[in-house]
Length: 203
Length: 294
Image 1: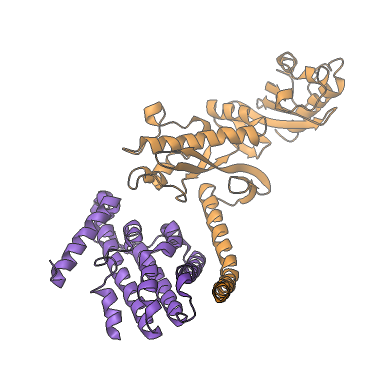
Image 2 (image 1 turned 180 degrees about the vertical axis):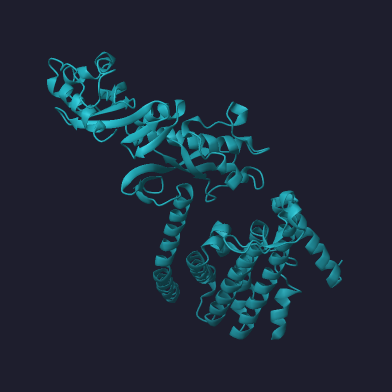
């Protein structure tokens, strides 16, 4: 049972191994805080949708499953969107359209269709948590690398904490701007993928 | 049949859940939005002021101690890859009190065009006349952002064109003259919207009195002995409410000329035939505005 949890983090990591859910991974990983916010939102939506889909899998008709998955997923995404806008307006502003876009995140529909619809509730729960945490870890690492190199800070929070100045004050004026632009995202993700292949011994 | 029922139940449950969460969060979301607008308004128009929304999300009147002290407007111009909007606070003379570029909806190049949101850029605008802002490149005195001229220029144009629009829509007719005095000599407000001290020249005031069709306004400059140095009578195109061809005859340079050199406290100027009510109103307005102005 526990391997479902670990699977999502390592062997079937959605981003590094399955290479799905890349759009939000690239788009909001410009800072560690944004990435973390996105990760937590995905964990919530993924776990809840997995849970409901798995619990209701016996009553969901085979040929209607996709629309029903989408309704369930978008319900939780909308809840996340409301809650974030109400309690973390700055974060909601930064993530912008990528919160509603979680609806079409392949990780979530993929786990609902590929796993939760065929497995028991506890297994689906663990799988959701695992995949969600796997996604969050990767996007957080990417966000950290890009923020540290591209802005010179780490964990800066808009309207709050100004972040750890990793390379000192001087670096803040002339950071490696390239890293927070889209090419920087592709580059970091490529290096991480290569590294994970190396570590798992697949390449 | 079963399929329809399942889909229906799923939708109903989803709707219930969402309306519950929405009910809980909607007031908070609204409050956040309001707080944010209020905070930005305070940023571009600091001090003990109150804001009155005129056009939702676009234009506010600013009141200090109950009298109009300026405006805050938002205007957008096409930038490099999005619309650059400027939120600008101006006082009644058209001088910029504060400016900021909201990040919402702005998607210029990160690290280049996006720098229009940075304080050092917007701070340059403070103290400038909104209608005269120009980049150094275009012959003005504002620094553009390196490698982001298009975004910088869009921002400058947003400030300028927004102001031109504001003037057309909201500003009283006499603002134009106040601004000219402010630019040429420098002025100091004595009573908002009523009296100004013009450096080395004397006192500028706005007087008004009831005419034939409504309030007639005059703008008068007197020296420190109370002698009229300059006068402008509201023109029909500036909203003079008098009868065309009769009352409007007073609104000419020729009639204004007769006031020059007279005492503002009691100007002995002839009443114009055919426009006696209006000319009396003008004389009355000159006196009324001067009252207590020494």
